[in-house]
Image 1: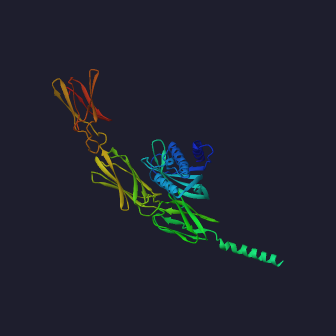
Image 2: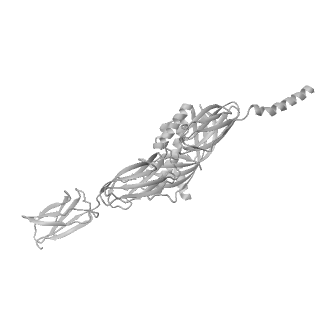
Image 3: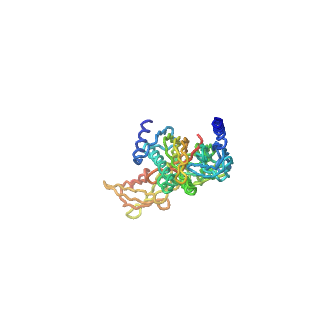
Length: 165
Length: 290
């Protein structure tokens, strides 16, 4: 299990831009539901896609640029984040999210291979800027339910929903 | 001396009273809000402030007077998720967090079914997964009963019931013995979603041919080909006829037409003729020795 976490962390580290701080990542994928074989390659691709999605989301929300979501988000998750960015633009807000730790558990790989569900107990920091001036910095800890679906070359986030721990 | 004493008393009194004049900003947040429900946030303090509520699903910025209640209508917060809130007053701030949870009534289903076409009588050949959403496209993570149904032309309906876990449920079902379109449906409460699954005949179960003379030729014809459930094998399925005679071999590939395959081969006395399709071998005919 530690080996897997290390592998995932290494894969993710290779994808981060220089200077970006790296979140701690732990992945648990025992007892994945669904009858489909969940192989190592798929698992790595799903986790990599999810962690990269956090980076895209953070950049999109910080710069108020919905186009930055295109690579990693689809469906409901993309629609909601796009709406949020439009709200931010309207109200003069921007938000900066910095994910610090992900504790991922892969729950389900659907038998037809078209979706993966995971939960992430994530620790992150959020800063709120109003017309460019920082208003608050808060640390948050939340449980996210995530549904990802495969696209041409990567897994994309279709549902990203926080819920009470 | 007396003046100094009064100054000291005055300073002490001001120091004691001043916090009452500039009461710090604070708010009382709900722990949870149901998506699409009204709620309010009570603030205390004095002066103006700005309330920020931020999450991945929504952001809110509201200017208010401290001491007032910030009211949110039913449609204001409808995206489930974790939200942080900050009340920024002129001289103090208050922070907190709360969750918006999905509405309990299912309104939308995301139903993934596969395959769209498969052979009959295949065990666990059809699979489906469903994600259950409320009217605001929030995944309903509370356990919800789900029913899957597969009904086909044979009139027999397979039903599986399940309860969602973290908003999803799944099943696997057998394809029917009879060919034709099947309706694969999922029901959650009073909403449903259906996919059409085409069930096609499987491989031929047996192959039998007959032969009759036609001048210098032998006319070969198969019986109508059927799969092991009795469904007619589709036209176009190739049958291979082979004639072996005097160390030589002649082969003819013929597609099925109207369920049967026909071919003509040279009539050699003592020839051995066989037929095959896929992995199925037919009967063998010894020409002229019957």
